[in-house]
Image (cartoon, rainbow, N blue to C red; front, side, top):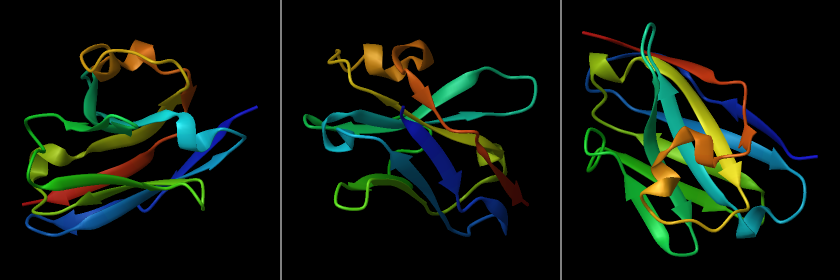
Length: 125
């Protein structure tokens, strides 16, 4: 059984930074594609970033501001968020899958099997 637990969310002013963490239990973490998604109130869950053996990928809205990384020795995924904007306010979810897929497919939430419970990020102007 794979479990994902996010932490690091909180409230910050525009222009500030936060680092989210996702602790993953279970085997084969290093082989998984891991991603971050976010969901604002009344909106769909959107792709933010993902990382796997082929590299990383970012949504245009966060490119240059957010950085996804992983520490396979610690079974932990990170999302460093800089230059935060009010429109970044959302619940952030980490997700994982062991399935090999195309880059475009990995931008879809339905491509991921494992999900965390989410952590709230609130950015005030």
